[in-house]
Length: 131
Image (cartoon, rainbow, N blue to C red; front, side):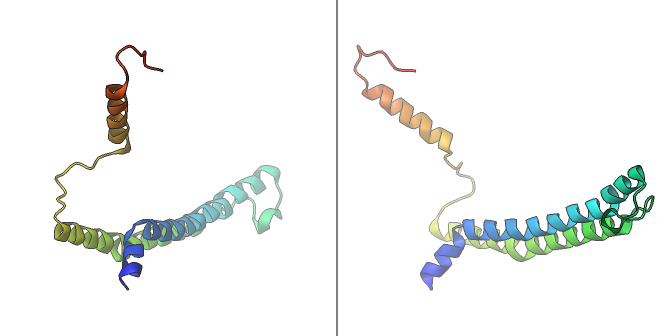
């Protein structure tokens, strides 16, 4: 059970799940914009009533609004059901381990600077550094 909890707490699993859910919701919004606005606009421009069953001049704004409302609801549920509890759990685990949020996290750039400085210190004094 400890291994499974560690696997879930890595962050990658949760982030991937959130990305899939939000991506699916965003796909619905984009589809609604295309079906409700773009396709009728194309049908009106070419006076073609059969482009994806769109009637020229009639925009389906309600379809777009409904998709946007669904997206906001899905994003809120994901945030309050997944993101917020995981952040609290991580904060609790960090506190238990003695890690404080005030400590600045070392970034990849900081690590690379340290490596560069160590390599410069190890170089022979007569050797010119490479660019």
